Amino acid sequence: MTTTKELMKSFTEYLQIERNYSPYTIVYYTQDIEEFVEFMNSQSINSISQVTYTDVRIYLTELYKHKLARKSVARKISSLRSFYKFLMREQMVKDNPFTLVSLPKKEQRVPQFLYHDELAKLFQASDQTTPLGQRNQAILELLYATGIRVSECCKLELADIDFSLGTILVNGKGKKQRYVPFGSFANDAIELYVEHGRRELMKKGNSSSSALFLNYRGSTLTARGVRLILNDLIDKASLSIHISPHVLRHTFATHMLNEGADLRTVQELLGHSHLSSTQIYTHVTKDRLKTIYMNHHPRA
Image (cartoon, rainbow, N blue to C red):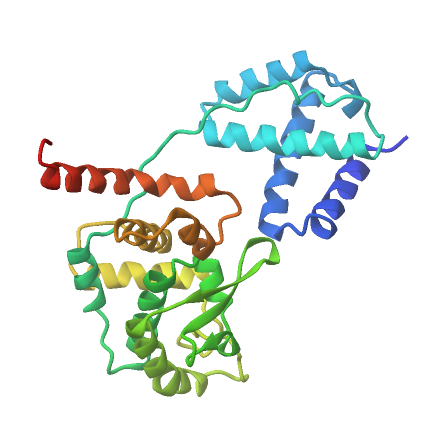
């Protein structure tokens, strides 16, 4: 008889090889399934195949007792539904008890973004006479110019930049690649950093790294490093706001839509698989459309 541990191992290999999921995503799937196995043990359920719809309802009740956010509950149910779908395909179980469970609706939160005056102060915060200042300015300009994720930013290599076309090759989620254009401000900042600042940082490292962004030791910059850089720039700009690299991604999308870009284009640039992920930014566009309407329609 196949053990639960063996089933999980098979599922993990399926996610890695067939679905091409990132290690980060697979960790969450594994954690969700392991938590459910703990629940099974507490309910004296000895096998994955013995789980019924009633058991799933009891499990949902337990999740809500712990006051988990609806988004977290939805993710756990989605993970387990996918797990059972795989087990059915492999003929390990006959039914999927999670099929009839409706996912809780996600909370519609308005994405935080920066206004133009806040961005202007942020862009003036770096000391571009120093290698680190040149690097920080290049990161800031690139994140706002392209809307790429911080993880994608840290994976960029010198060979991924095409200055002649003004594009970068981005390695996104699920190993999907996309080309994203960047403008003149980002171009100037990156060129200055590559020609001067990066060369100085390279001298501090022991290896010839191909990574675009380096830390002060000459090694590849991490996502945590990017967050620390942004926090430092916020302090220097004397802004009383908290931002993360993702806020710059939100700002990119919001400003693009407000200036008339269509939703499909923004979806492509952000690397979203589904249009629904991009639609969270339309709230701002609707507000702007209403303002334009009220200011210009003769009978508004």
